[in-house]
Image 1 (cartoon, rainbow, N blue to C red):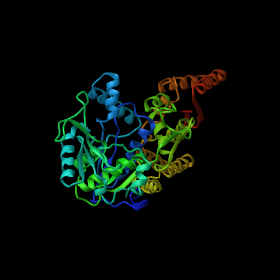
Image 2: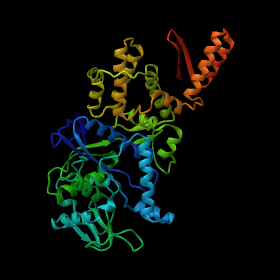
Image 3: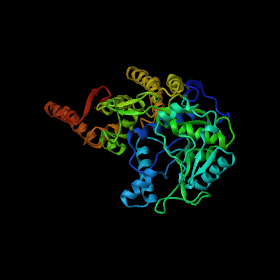
Image 4: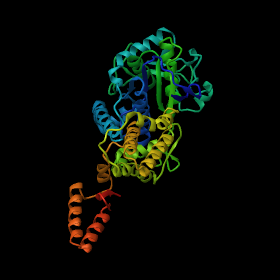
Length: 458
């Protein structure tokens, strides 16, 4: 397997720390609002990577929940509810939305609030090692003490600070120093610490949770490309200094962001697309297909037609499976051979567009294959590929029944076909044609064959 490593700026062969196990950490949601489609891309991308890694390794996958944040404080205050009530509500919504997109739960899903004592201990360690300092009840990390600061983003400190939103404060020694702990007012969330009542900064949270659940050095750290600086840059600095290690994570993976009709998604433009609203428009598999149709490292442009195009792709796959449904057990070796190019595409830096092209190549073979044993293997191969992409989780009939607004159940369709056969036996072709046209108007086509009448959803 080869992955593009943001740290080295090149595609590298993946070599885990341990021969048979992999440790992966992905930055999760800050829970104060409904997740939008941009929030959904990392979970889907790294869900596919997790499925792929599990083919060969024992995977421990940690995706955190940030339930301490100034945006959370502001939203809870605006709504007049407790922070705990707000975060509990949106954790449930996030999990529900991600599950609808076929995203499996990670191995561990730690919350910041469960790690406060560990965060305080870690900050103390940084202070004792002279990497952090106290100023006006704040604790800051001193980036001048870490000679490799900027190695992830590949730019010098001045460029980084001028090109990003960095908190300006007269309490800092350097403009780029970042907060590890900050004071809280009495009406704000906070905890007792050696520096007074307060709360942790954003960056320290992930360092502590990664260390607590995965150890000093992890194999893969992932997230959106907007986190490279300052979040991931700061994670590296405080982790490598606090733990006295040379490498916090061996491979850094970052997905591209989502634009809407070529514009940045933002509240000011009114183009923020919530996952919950999109799920009212389309099945979760359709949305997932839209997310994986572009290579994960590239920006994804969300257009008016993307859901329709994605549904058409899934319909083509399900249609092939519907035409050739079988209960015959396939030859596993044959299935693996058919899937070979598919897995080669995924193992080439998670190239989902190429992997999807390989699935459609198998679909094409199935549609033209006359040999039953070959068809059985091809059907199994399509399902296997779909499982790794997190799609094709429905039976074909269920898919078309639920996603084409059809009113007729399978039982009702079979009853109408029986009535049509009776009409044909009586040579009542007008009634036979009427039933056929009625079925067609409701999205069901039929074909008379030597083996009998077969039907499918359009």
